[in-house]
Image (tube, rainbow, N blue to C red; front, side, top):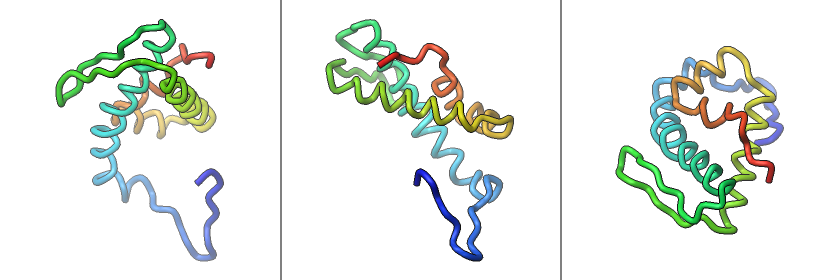
Length: 112
């Protein structure tokens, strides 16, 4: 997945062919849930909070913030670095439409 290679004659699907089915999934499960939690968790970890708590469309989410969360903070920082490295107008638009942009473009990433 880090360096995908095309087989002879193969092609990647375009965003236009995937958008109708993939966009709702990305928005609901990644943008509004996973990245929202990752961003909140990173802020709680950085401020030494004991609890990460925020509202989701499913209700209030709460978890203890402990040593295990430092790996999630590192993961979010890695996603942010990859996003920064490949940003362009089309990707920014997709990330905005799927509620991923704010968490990925956050300029106050943890230094962990």
